[in-house]
Amino acid sequence: MTELRGHTRVMAVGEPRVDAFSESEPMKPIRAWSAVLLLLITGAALAQGRPHVHGVAELNVAVEPGRITLQIETPLDSLLGFERAPRGVAETRVAETTIAALKAADALFKFTPAAGCTSASVELSSAALKLGTPDPAEQHEGHADLDATYVFKCADAAKATEVDVGLFDAFIRMQSLKVEVVTAKGQFKRDLKRPSKRVSLVR
Ligand SMILES: [Zn+2]
Image (cartoon, rainbow, N blue to C red; front, side):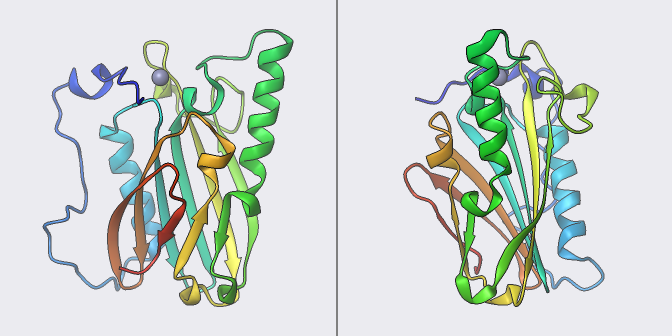
């Protein structure tokens, strides 16, 4: 069951959720904007108004010629079962195992083979785990998030029509993913719920 905690982070300030691109808007062709730029803008919008719901993570996917970039933002609880620095041997081991699983990009994301995608970089950011350069505003009322950015180089990214996401296999607490896909042809959203793992990258 999904826990609903820490909602004050969004609701208390009384700001509506910021969606840079709502579903109701007509799809505009992407010209001056690169997919990654759109991804960053969307990520910034999410950062301002995102809810922190245990078991639910956000996954942004940007498909560009030659590469695919994926961003995950998840409550730390969904990965570790706690949202602070690990204490003691057992928690430290959980943290180490989790970090190793997050770095295993090729196991977490499997694209259509014809696209020829291979992992190029993984960046993790978490204050509690002392990873990357986390946003100081991340920690709220005992809650904490982890951000991860994955870049895959692809021989022909346009042939990546789907991706199999291994997050539910790797992290038993993760229940659903709010997926946003940006390609040269447009942008759309998908919800992925355990045990499904396949996300279409074409509208
Ligand atoms: Zn939390």
